[in-house]
Length: 232
Image (cartoon, rainbow, N blue to C red; front, side, top):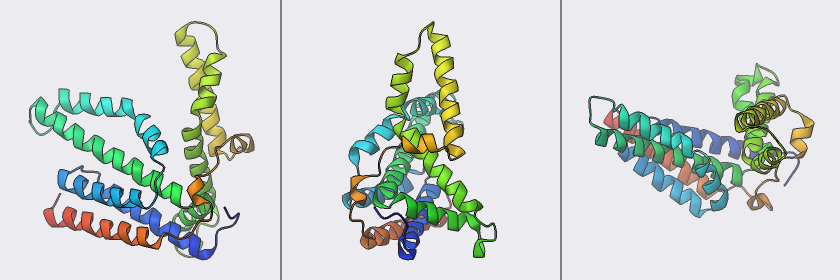
């Protein structure tokens, strides 16, 4: 991995970032047709290179959120429908969320973190970077916090194993520790940075995935044509 992203690297990363955001925004209503098309887009990107193990771990880490969607839409269905309709709505929303996770895993696995940081920083900095270096600092801390969230499971298990006392007290201590670690990551703490996992091996010998970007933006056009054309 190169230490400093070239201009073309950051531009390609920005195209991927905006494309993933475009598909993700179209998935917010979780309409079945849009979810199906987004699934085809995600599947095509996965064929260009995806860390399936990492994607599976992140998808499973949201299992309690999936359960909350099932309970919310199944017990209190929206639009006057019955519980069966509510469960269908929950299912499509869960599928949409899983697709967003897959898209993010693909993007962060195919583009070096420095290029993504520079791309997001450039977008947040505004035209001609009128906000100065704020955008890139925020982007760096955001990706640092996301990487910490993904790689914190081992450290969390070690921390939990070393605690004593009743279960409620142990949970409170773990929660306080996680909040502290997240604060350190968002503040750019060096100690947290040193413990982060290495980037995906797919980035070794990295080249701009031009065909994948073309497929992604074709998918953006397709999902938004469906959203705007059907009036979802």
